[in-house]
Length: 206
Image (cartoon, rainbow, N blue to C red):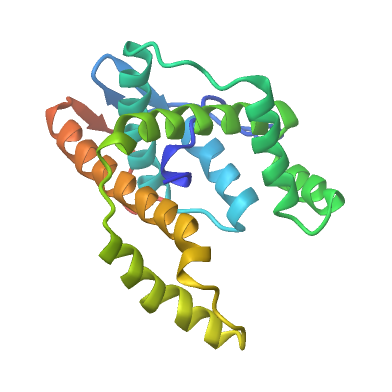
């Protein structure tokens, strides 16, 4: 869900882009530069990106979440949360130097990475607050996850699996996150059906 919820607003630095409207969502617009920036961020954190048409659908989903979060006056993440989020991105690389080189190659500036991380946190925090209270995880689901996921994975690595009690909290949180994702997917599908959306991006665009 975390990649589902990245928010972007400006073109990639160092790229010369003739901007244009690629979608209208109610009375708002999504620009080609929005699509290109999200694509650049995906390339930074994943080493690859989705097609422009898929990214456009993600931006429409972001619009839905952001609009409801703002209507609910949901608080923005604080500086410490954002700093931690940026740090996680940097630490996903083997070194700070590799991160800087990759960021420069793609054409993202520090301010743009920070803005995207802040928006990602805002949207994911809102979805968590909206759907976590209704997430229901029973003991059988925890035991099934342990037997079907945790134990086989440990054995495949030649490791002794942790006890169920030791792994319980981690398993429960993983199942809660999965339930939140499923609830959010259903809500987004229902919300999209009520929106007036026009797309002007060619199908199959890469």
